[in-house]
Length: 438
Image 1 (cartoon, rainbow, N blue to C red):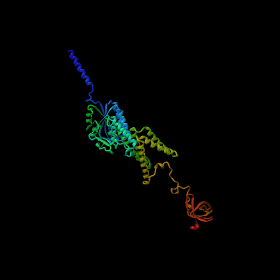
Image 2: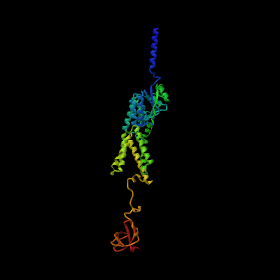
Image 3: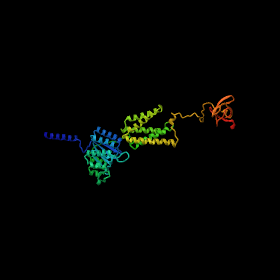
Image 4: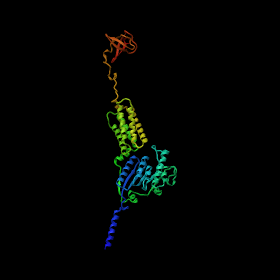
């Protein structure tokens, strides 16, 4: 009897022990699902950094990056790859359509890769800002990065190199010499650049043994989406051009209205986006504001040096706010050219004048046409006769009814003691003509 009770107790203890152990197939722990979409740039890095941080704090075991990107910037891809390498989380890249260029590089840094049946991975040649193939130095560094990415996940680096180097000949995968390698889902599975092909996210979870996992969806906040849009290399020069044109049009308009508000708003959006994206620090904003202050001071302090320093500080602040100083310099030059063209159009075709200068520069002239004279006009003298006291060469003195006045000859030299007729009076200028000319 005691033996039966002992056996029952052992069986009960064993059952409780088994229940206490989490079943791998039924519970995959906590999994974070993070979209990696659109261009790879610094704004995306900030979002992924937040996602990885939250996943690690929450005790997640796996993070799935759902990739659909045409590529992006090498520096941003490098930072994201480092983020993936340094995390303790198990990383899975789910290529839901495209992982091209920098997207392929990031997928290779994942512990596992799964692809949609219509997915593609490859075409990872590094290009410069003009859209041409980068120089030998940049290309060599990128090839080394692609090779290291493949080797870090135990994959054959030949295919990674063929994605970035058109000189590698792989005709069996439509990548003969002169063409970059892009693998389909089946081809990636064949060369072991994919662990499997799945048609949906749920199928991915089942294939990866994560069916019972708690899925935490990560989404970009409105601020992160806005920051990514604002920091897009195409949007930056447009935003700066709007700022320049808005402020220029405001200079030609009385008061402060819509154009000025648009210009200031564009600048605020520029710095806001770059601050949220982590591209700019407050030092760049402070430098820009200091430049604005120096430009304003230039209106009150003569010399011009404050204005030059202020303009340089503003440009430096804008360039410092960007991820790539060279691209930011191009954006600033583009905006300056458009702004100057706007000024020329306003002046030449619309005949506009700078209203701001009207408040600083004295434009009024005290001329006769405007009704200004140095003394009272003696219009009553017009038509009266006088006699020259001195020769008029052409100016001199004449007498009229005992009064000596300064006069000037209208046409030619007039001798002394000649009768003259007063023909015009303009303030202190009295014009006479010899009486014999009448």
